[in-house]
Image (tube, rainbow over all chains, first blue to last red; front, side, top):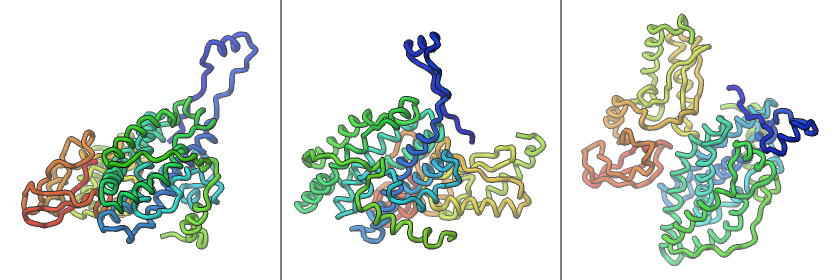
Length: 281
Length: 164
């Protein structure tokens, strides 16, 4: 498949005047590849890291049904990561495929948001994290379906159908635990309170994404926030839970500033391919 | 697509081979009945395959099965290409595939509504006794594409293909 990246045309009149007046050198067609590569790492890494976290529940969840659910959600996320990271490798064109990017990068090179790398905590914390992430990711993919980069759009169109299940299942559990026993309610409140500090980062825009969004490749995350807030409030109301207190937000994951937890996760996840670099199965 | 490379007869013979390749997890339904073979495309001529779920672990096994079946039938020159778009939908499961799912004990997804209905909350007939008194036990089942249900009349648990 050949890349079909848009070229940038001088848009506004002022610029066009400058072009006509000869004082402005029309830019070469913008090379989006480096920015797109970074963006794809952000998309792929957040799915990969949360998928890895969820596999830690395998065999440990409270009931068989939710054990299967968490493993299945993890599998979907790792499937998304495979698609995004393989595409990142294609865009980078330096001989790295999805596996190479997943298993042979160090912690500072990971571009996931901080929420997904946080430890599972108790079951309610895991549900809180999943609910916040899947609600955000559903809005993100609904936007990316219209990306001007067709390879991104088709991954989003594929994955959005799966994420609807994740969002629905985790919302059901927030309601069940929140409107459950005193104990489950207390833990659900604590889980949401803890993860609330990582919410802002998911909707944060930087220069890289602003440029990609202006070209129609990326989604303007700030526009997703309203839908997210509405949906979260709706579910919390049904769960008879208070909206979490607003703590100071923590950000930095997408530029490689991670919590200490990511390194430990990578040590487990990357051990085998790094110890036996030619291992295949 | 080169006419000489893919005449009608050749297409039919290739599709007949694919009709015999079964899904590894549901070995009564072929890859064509499941709707994951999207056709043939050339040049070079390839079988177009689309995954059911992004993370479906059977994807590689399915590709391998197709490869082996094609090789045995003498179609070593036919490639296999994965396509993502348009995304697979349970609406593509054929009528024959749906019948085989029921015989195998799996409730098929309702047809023609995948694009509009995600939940799969509507009543579903028990594949064993036909009763509509059934309930969902778990949204996620033994494979990514199935949910776990239970019949309130014959008390048998069963898998339900998720509407997707």
